[in-house]
Length: 72
Image (cartoon, rainbow, N blue to C red; front, side):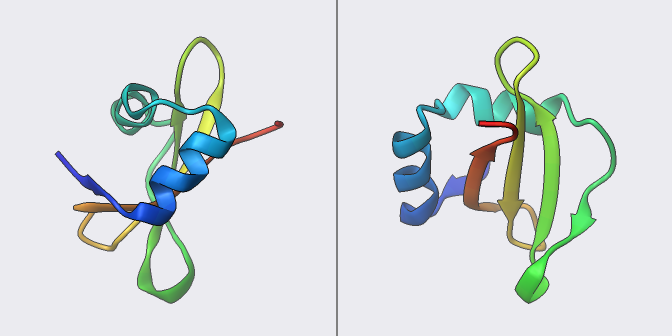
């Protein structure tokens, strides 16, 4: 299971996104991972209901850097 950077936890709290939603989004991806900035990768997946989350991870997918919900 990936670990969460403090930045990711802060953004999750601000955006009312739970850890369970993030882990669920990583399991229910909308497509393959995409390249992100600074060697990171970006994953889009379903959180709760039909809410889509954007999750930024380290290249090895072992650390979650940031999280946001699309359209909010």
